[in-house]
Image: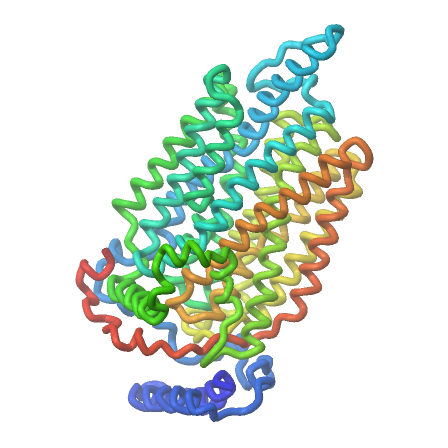
Length: 586
């Protein structure tokens, strides 16, 4: 009901802007106040009116019309450029970190395979005296390890690692996301990077001293990574940073840049790692360099990058949290919180109730979160399986696997960094993208999501049918077009909630991603482990069906729906109390 009132009054405000009254700030303020009063009074039409599409509502983003400008960066006006937050501050060091992340994907998996193969051969030799032992060269391709028994053990080990990291990150992700709303994005980004740092350290020890540190120490690294939120929280916090300093209609492109950095790291990282290993004749050199890259990222975060949340916004979020704690009373005590711990509690933001919410908002948030979780779970569950599958199906080693990952990731980066920005610019226009007000996700974003999921589905169907390396790579390139879906899904989700709840929302999606990191690899690794000796393409059949489910869900999301939640507390804190002063952004 409240959204209906907002749309009814904003139509009058928009008409005033069209008739030349846009320069009259007092008129705009008066109209906005009337909007809030009538929304609170429940004046408006039925819920269906909040679901009107562009033509029915008289609002068309494609035609370039826009309402009041987005004002998310007004608190930083008057500051020099090097003290203003921008995604371009974060992208270069983030790319360095993702290069390190991508560079160790294949070497780490092959390192695990080598260590497990050593154990497997040792077990076989003790049980069967006639078993011929072939020497295993650390860091090289070992044909004796390309057997179903070793493949099954590797799948189980990676499953355990993902379970440990996923469960712990599911617990910590929502907390870290909510903390970033109250204490800033930078501090929490440093915390999440610490997890990657610990993971590299434990891997180095397990590889360098296998007699002292068993392969199970790598599982300890997974645990430490999960406690810090893993890369799931790192991506969510990067998106939160982008949300703070990017207008709603540009967020899909901004999120796409971060995804582009991620897949650039996955594309170029393995190639760079391969040349480093070849030059140094040591696999461990890659992990040392990755360790240094993560350290540089943390140093740059702490010393150079401006905080995207001003002190006033952080104070407002802390005050709001304090009032909520006071309202809960003894129930908020940490002992009682442990007693009544509910892992799924943070997901309540996906089903908001009270003033400003509606069935349409709840339906959109749930459906978008489901599609986003499915896309993420397949990405996480398939990566390891695809590499292991190509190892036994096409006899691919380090070089071939790295080339495959690089080609597919390069196609995904091209779609994210080139295709998505160009399409967005052509559809929205230059001025419209910078000044449009937030009206929830629109038809353009929903179309991008549906097309992306469709290409993912076609790509994994190609994996199922391909019986040669080139066709398998071609299928991967088709699936890579679906990469434009993830940033658009994240953008669409953030446009459904007020700015001060962005971290909380992305923390909730981080929880879903963490659960998906558990469920996806668990299911897909288990399927592959059980069918690798029979019909090893079974897992890709399941992945194709999963994307089909996501494609169906995407058609039930409606455009121009959002949570119009009045923020009384925000009004009590001066938005630009210290604008122009350095202390505002520290």
